[in-house]
Length: 270
Ligand SMILES: Nc1ncnc2c1ncn2[C@@H]1O[C@H](COP(=O)(O)OP(=O)(O)OP(=O)(O)O)[C@@H](O)[C@H]1O
Ligand SMILES: [Mg+2]
Image (cartoon, rainbow, N blue to C red; front, top):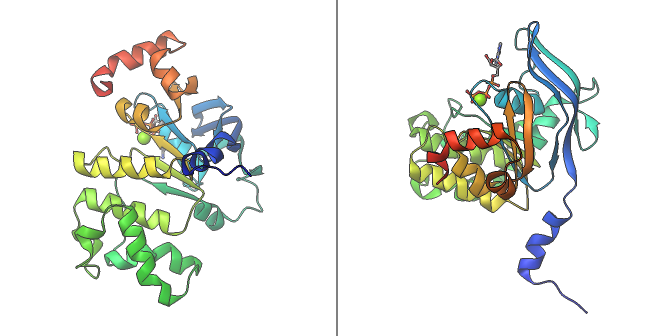
């Protein structure tokens, strides 16, 4: 009988990836104007997709739409559909809390709660009543280890999370997001405010998630997009200019606008 090697086992799910999130004729806007128009995108499961584009091109608006964090913003408008696992996430019947458990998000600026480090990690778990109390210490340790934060905080878990450095807070947010076992992680420039060490820790974590979790990563750092993602989508002036496999995107871009954008940001991409 044929048995798969560990490497084959690791690659197998990625090869079979199916689209987990799709947008259909999606337009997003605030007030009377559109930020993004008529997007037809698909994000495959267990793949890392990078969203790149100039400031103001709508990367954050798109990510926030996917776990409905734009809901309630003044003037927010959505037309078309976002399908997650073939369900329209803006359907009235969709439970937004349940959606956010399955589709977690990490923001550009870390948002820690005014609670201890320990309680921050457990926030979603307690809210959703996912585990029993006796499991909490192990979960906290496992999540902090996965976020490369355990060694730095293991002796001060009861201290306020707000006392951590920004890089540590971002890793804590990641641990909190991962603790509820989401299927999708939306990451909006998660390393833009971080030093090289914290950036490397988060990039390693994303690489580790590759093949296991669906990640959408908005970034201005083209080196990061190139080294981490499987697919890159370039958004400009509210539209998708180009989307293709990352290596091909950077070595053989199909549009002049993409070529120019890569050249302009070349210092990031060496
Ligand atoms: N809450 C809001 N109300 C009104 N307009 C908004 C709101 N949020 C975003 N916008 C507008 O939507 C457009 C896209 O913004 P968005 O933050 O999505 O861009 P971005 O690509 O993430 O930019 P950056 O790279 O600077 O983070 C901008 O013109 C912005 O002013
Ligand atoms: Mg943004």
